[in-house]
Image: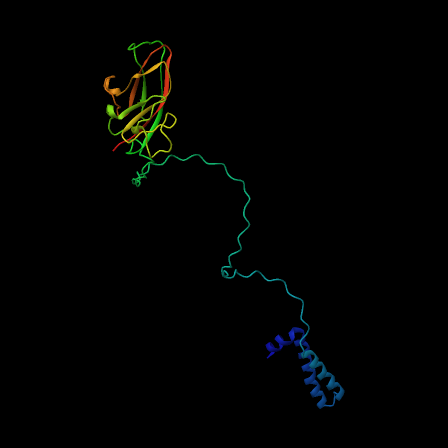
Length: 258
C-alpha cells in the first residue's frame, strides 16, 4: 500500500501524509479524552487531503545513454535523375588493328544491256558508226609515183569483214549511190551527214587538192595492200597524188549488216 502511495504522491508527500495520519489518529484519541476541538479536527483533515494530492512535476533528469541501433528501415524510392554533366571531350584513342577480310559476297544479278550495245561486243545489226579521215602527200607527182595512205578505224568492230563490193568512195560533187543512203537517218547523205546502208562502208570526200579520184582504193589492212574491202576493225584508204602538196579530207559511215 505504501508503494502505491509513493508512486502517486512522491516521497515528500508520503512523509507529510504519514505525519498527518499520526496526528489524526492521535487526535482521535485526544478527542476521545477531550484534547482536540472540532476546529482542530477539520484542520488535520484539511492537511491530510492537501498532502494526498500529486505535486508539480520536477525538473527533467539528465539524458540517458543512447540505446542500441534499431533495425534497418525499408529501401526508399529511387531519386530523380541528376543533371547532365558538362565535362570536356576526351582525346581520340589510337586506331585499332585492321580486321580480317570478310567473306566474298554472292554474285549480283546481271546488269541491263548497255545502250546501244554492250561494251566489248560488236556493232549490232542496223547500227551505224561514223568518223573522219585526212590524207596528204608532200612530194609524189604523176601517175603511179606512189600512193598516200591513211587509216579508217572502227571504234566498234564488225562481226564479219566486208568485201570489195561493200566499200564505196563518194568523190566531191558526185551523186550519192543508193548504198550510201540510209532511210533510218534524217537528211541527205553527204560528207557533212555521212550515211551507209546495212552492210556497207561509205567514204565521203569533203575536200581534195592534187589527188586523183580515179586512182583510189579502199583496202583490207590484213591484205598487205592487195585486197579491197574492210576488215572487222577498219580499212586503209590509198590515193594517188597528181601534184606536189596533195591533200584531202572527208568523213565515213559504217552500218552493220545481218
